[in-house]
Image (cartoon, helix red, strand yellow):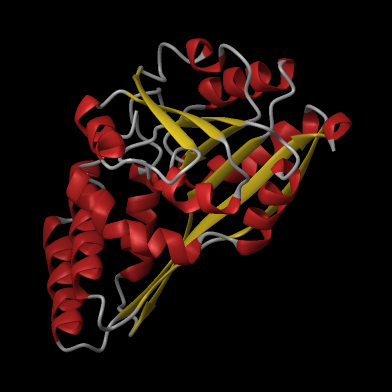
Length: 269
């Protein structure tokens, strides 16, 4: 599942592209350079951002299976033909219920973006065990890790991000979510299963001119803090008003931490 609107996915995609860790991407490309064809399963595909980010770095032919529970997003992912030598098939499935069905057949790589912070500990265990049993490598990008930096700072920033990170741990469709610990826990799981893991940061760098992105993020965080009910409404609305004023004055910038990793069974390296 993706759980995101098409508009939000389109807004964030350029920031995701710039943020993806180049060392991790190079490790994926190097691992797959001798594969023919390359067979990829992309989980929580949304509109196909991972395919667009990764396909140009891999040899052709490529066969992609795009998995999401949102048929509307999958239709957007396949409406534009991919590059020559790339075939993409959209498959509507609920990852919360149909995980094993996504791993049928020959697979050279499982990919995902912005997913591991949404899943539960139980789901992560099941996923890691399932791919390890098949010796499948995993490229997981853009997992939120809870680190945020604002400029200029506001006295309420720490409390707000604490509330946001607590909200990240609520049920996102898989049970209680791992939130900011998702990537670190996944890396540990795969290392424990005998995988070698290359990882690195992939933070969003959002500057004063990126006003639409800042407003969308800040509004979403204020809404999350309100939904959680851990902070007084006046504090949340006051923080959002001050932050929006800084954005309007073009003096606001934001950095949001993410983690990318590429995990490969040691025996396949």
